[in-house]
Length: 323
Image (cartoon, rainbow, N blue to C red; front, side):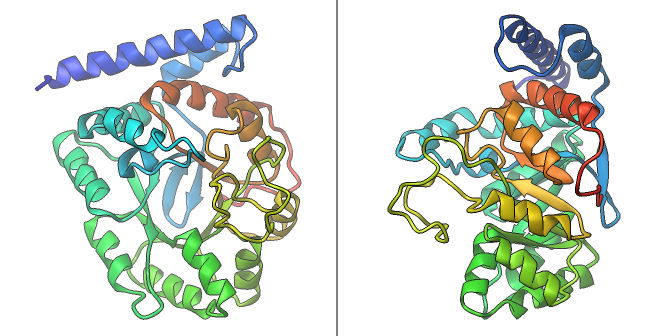
């Protein structure tokens, strides 16, 4: 087993190498984070702009949790999920979490399954990590408390109802369950949120005054080639092709502009169909307060530099910062 000194040296060397690659790719015209001097300066600080969700101070760049859970939205490339699981061993995941924290990313969204919960416990205890876990809540209509309570007991810093569940309850006319979940989560002393792919979930939750501490709503461009087949119903999230999640980005922007609560945008690159530079810029320009994206270890530094660059250039937005 590696010593802590060896591991930290490896992480530092890995980060430096990645920053060098980012600068080099920029020089030859590939999308990259920034010009070399700015990139080097940003990489050395480990700081990221932050916002508030309840009492939590959260980095504006949040890691997705599929690197831990092993899910992979990869359209018809069936081997990708297994490849990702083989690469992201428990040790590799903890190395990645450590690198994320070193670069200023202090929160990750992940589902409440045994594997990620065990890795978090090990990371917090063995490596002294402080990474905040924003847990997907997987409540059922029959039992809204057990799954959510388990995540909180395990150390979740915040919980929100998973977007697929929010969509389902809206379709079934059971949206009041979202309000009950938010009330229960907040009663446990952590921020409570609502997730959605369909913007109607957010709009109706606002009308019903469920008072969540934050929303987790998909947002991305829809101008990539696999975004939609002509025969698909644009209102169906479970489309079978695993290739889009924000049915109407313009509508999302319009509704969220009037929402005075923190908004975490997720599926921001449509599972790798969109390059980070235009994808991240689109999300922040359209009003998201936080951006969630899944990252391999070799993507961390470049993503951090890119977010810092975009936020530094952003200026005013139509939707004010709500966090």
